[in-house]
Image (tube, rainbow over all chains, first blue to last red; front, side, top):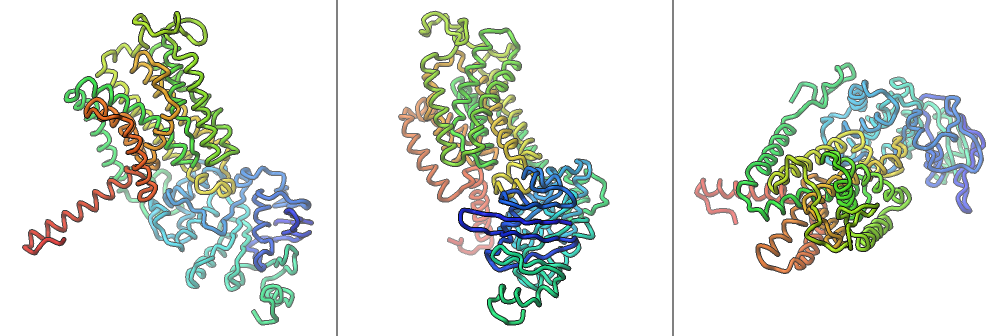
Length: 238
Length: 363
């Protein structure tokens, strides 16, 4: 469980996150909102790249904001970025192994854990293949494998399906859904693809201009009229 | 190829993968073969001045390798490599005159102290990047040149600077000692090649291991590296430490090779030439460092001693080569040459097939 209380982030003159309090209960949680709503800023606060002006974040009872940024991975925080960050010069295996090496998980279980993560995401390429030679779908899966290897506790996925065609998004959704059970991690999914969010997430929170406008079970939230207005700017059905 | 290839599963016994592949074996054999040629064949066919040049090629390859580690692996431009080579050379000479330590110990001392200095120089890299880091390290190279031009290299005297007499070079200045097992030029050439091969292997182990993966992550994106839990400070300094260590060892090798090193032979601009040749050779491959060594040492020798040309023409050649690399082959010659040769081979094979089948050759 992640408890966010009164979180406020200010950059000169703008407030990308404005007094947000919400709870991510567990499983796979959606975080949606129009562009500029503060979703990625929220991830950056969790990662430690942005220092909030006020508020607290307790993740499984630990004060996340007091931890040094690079130590959060060791604690169990994983994330992907909107732009893909799989490392082209390294092989698939090395890409995933590299995360494991800094996760605090023991060296002895490394190879087995890495191969298990690669298999989990359903990558059909050889682990020895260089990521530079892979297509968009495989690279996204490598990123997910990187996010689940080595005892993750919180997995942040920032638009993992961006740029993928529908059937590949569906496969990705199936993989994401299995993360909490398989690895015992809480997943927060940011995406604009509502079918992916509804397929994966039991609960969803909606940000708009830095404010929380709805949160709760995904189906209810997506029917919420504030959400529809914020998201589409119209009263149209989602 | 062993069994555990593409479809490993969580229950597989550990260490089944990565197993040694055939490609790796072939590569290792090629390297071993080239090493044997360098050690056994070259000395018997090449003359004395060639051997001295080849020794320099090996030494400067290591300096270029240091540049390659910093820029090719981590993405930090350091133009201070020649300064570190000079410092290693100075320390090697100083300890050689002052102590009777065995030569391998001198190598380690020079490497160790240069490593400490180089890591300090790398500290700004934690805050600066790109052009600013390049400028800082170039200033460091300039400062080293100035200190040297005032104090020059040790010549067997006492005190910190180790200058004997008036500082003028006399015939009585004893040369920096070489290992007792490798006093002649040919023996010392072999000794140098072996030490440099060990340094290359040392770097290879880093690149193929945990540090190499962490460096690749930093090079890709520092935020992503942070999110992956990489201690960026530690790994950047580690890269500087490694690059400085190997360059320091190479500097000590250089001290014993030239015997009586002089400040005049180490110019600030050599750092730029080394960077240029390292880029031309290719910074992503260890072969690129060897190409850089050949370009920066063998070509001047060919121009001056063999062909009687002004070696300054080389600067133009390097400029053209650098442009060529930047425009067409970011991976340098070490990447471009095999690719072009493979294309050429395919073309030749096509022509041969066409000729064999009696058709007109494809133009």
